Length: 256
Image 1: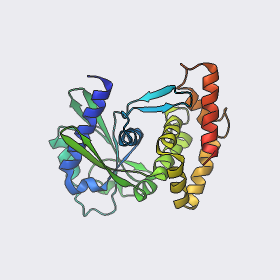
Image 2: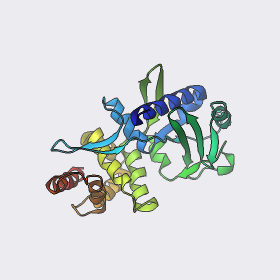
Image 3: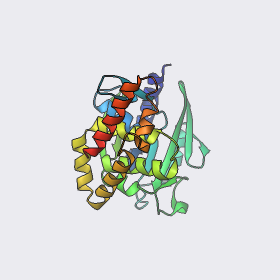
Image 4: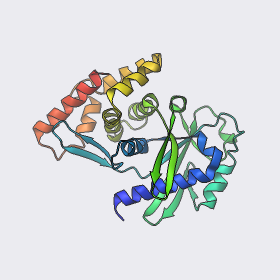
């Protein structure tokens, strides 16, 4: 099974899981790298996390095989206690406090669960990781529908402010030495488009302005941390092409 086939298999399983969750699925927002994957699919792409340079070179980070799910736990009337029951019925086992895993024909699928920071962890139906930026992700989320062979995937995606806030926090606070978050930020802005990102930042008011400032600090020059993270994925390019890519990243975020 190819990596793309494995990715599609995981999305089909996710779609079937959400269908079985019923009304509970309306309270689920996809976060993390798979947001990029679904945005790519919506625009006719393959779902691979990648950036195409101005010279036509394609720089890939690869496929995201681990869905991260944020549950809106504002009240318990939606029957959240069904979540672990449905997971077990579908063959998942809890492999970490916040992670459920299932063996598929193409490999093991890991499902990481998140809840808004500040909720009573004792009241959750199963262990979840508290997410500081959950309010932003939930507030601007919109449902998307993607056909996946004989089934379909219906799930909510965060808007630009929700997605970028989580990625910026991850880079600045949670994993500052890793390169994937800034690459994902760059890929997201190029994929979604400056107009949509600007509109989301403007709608978010002061929070949007604060996020814009953080983005511009990460990508303010060709030797800024965010730009260096992008270039780390472009080792196969000629030096002149890497320089052009670095300047393109600076220009993109300057235009925010």
